Length: 130
Image 1 (cartoon, rainbow, N blue to C red):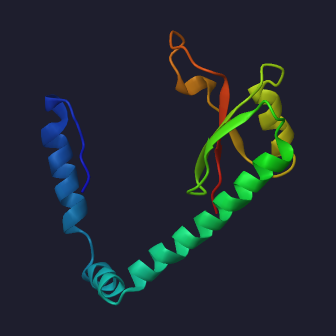
Image 2: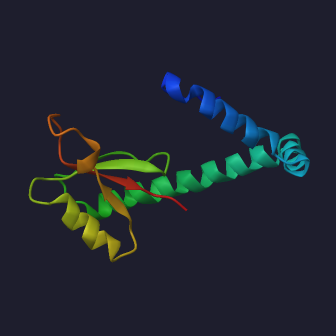
């Protein structure tokens, strides 16, 4: 189930647009979706993804333990998708992002995700996907 919060002035426009999109979903697409769900293919796909991300999470944790300095902390990673690294003061987040980018490891500095007034430790969020 999904929710959307809209200002009252957009409700009518959104409702008309949503109705138009829903009406134009083809019978073929609906039938294919029904087969996909009822045949168990969707469940199989979800189990496969969970196994893959669990493996990635295990590799991520091993990588952290092998390559991060002792004073660094990390959270998450069990899902293999998102994890936070709390860096020691001597390491700048953007330096780590740039360094790992050259090794085909994508890391996102989280500085822009916080309000300037909030108290926080400097950290980087690593998103391990496909």
